[in-house]
Image (cartoon, rainbow, N blue to C red; front, side):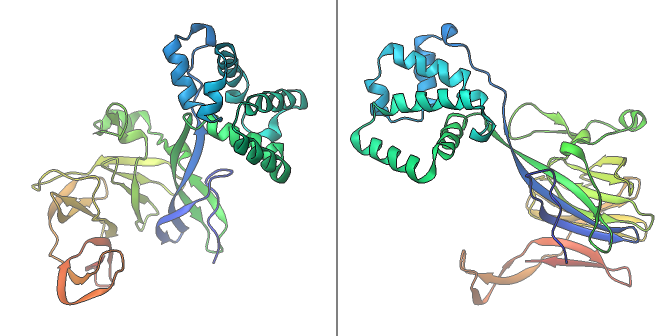
Length: 334
């Protein structure tokens, strides 16, 4: 038993799926990285009065009453100082003494405009928590509009003792050879934000992995509408689109999931128009056949509480598949 290694410093790994072969154990994991987007704000002298008001509404750490009582010159100073100092700082510990003293003087000045009860709370906080913690709270408040959560996915390769051998890909990027780029068609998907992208070179929402007898690792990236084949060192050997076959359009937000290799064939569980289905590929990504999965009837449960409702069943969903010793596929579901 061992803990998963961090994806990168400060980014903990959370387990998604697992596979193993003679080369070791492969864990598909994810973690959330918090980053600051680049500052994209005009300088004070370039702002209109409306832009100044918007800035004060979205980057303020004082009460509305305090800002109401400030003069126009003080509001302009507040905006300018915030852009020049607070939006460029990361934490109080990284500030030199001169910079920190300027920030403390600035914060103390504007707290003088607060109602009495706010001033008392401010003074208690400084006495109990100290200036560094207060500055960090202010930086968090000021920069909240710049903070962005990045979901990082990795395949972590461990030996049987739990030692991390390697993990990949870096920042979700898939490195395709020039030959692979030219021999495969773009796989266009629509992300939650921004224009359509070609998912061949990025992991978007991988959920299952499996391996074959030759040591290759297969990853089902449902959000990217693709299967990625890696060699044991993490290099991309192949990538192909999740095909529809004769089924209706594939839903890449599918709750039906599963991936397995058996007898030189790869089997993928997905959902097409709410119907769980399975597709069979050869190990080069050619679709051989696809079809519906027989309905799974499971005991009905009370929402949230999970209590079984006697004598009542409901449609379940496939959560994974595996091959038994006879070569038959075994479904798990709930």
